[in-house]
Image (cartoon, rainbow, N blue to C red; front, side):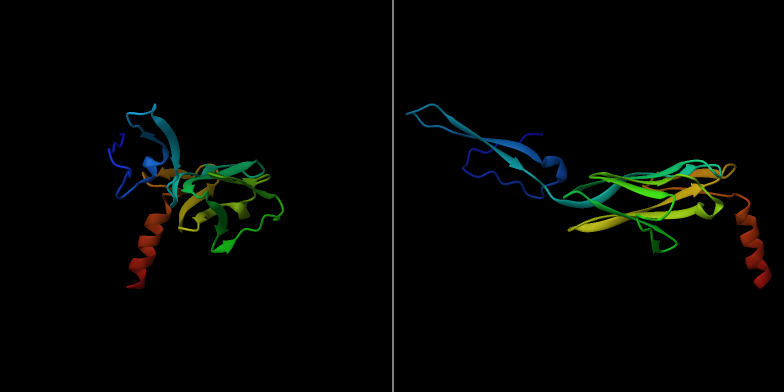
Length: 168
């Protein structure tokens, strides 16, 4: 959708990130040929996670969790497990960050590595997070339409309900 103005100003109210890009200004009169200048408009916005991929990996294999976020300025990523921030130098684990993508790589998955991880994407305008699972073979993967994907064992729900009933 283009914007047109016959004035010396082009006012865009309620600008969105989709309206970023190059705009052209043309000035003319009856004396000389039109003069054209281009203006680049950058719209800053807080991160939103567009994709969060969990994975099922057998013990001893390589596994990767992936978190993709769109943001201007680019997002910075952090990974957490059980509310503890993962430090880059942890043995057997590597974090690869790019401007719009972060990967948490396990070189030799152990049972201790299985569980729920949180990817946090932030810039100066805000932050967001997604829950991502690293699970073993045989677990049932459940994908939601949101930004996070989770996996778990289906048989845990009846046990939880039974436990709650026994308390009353």
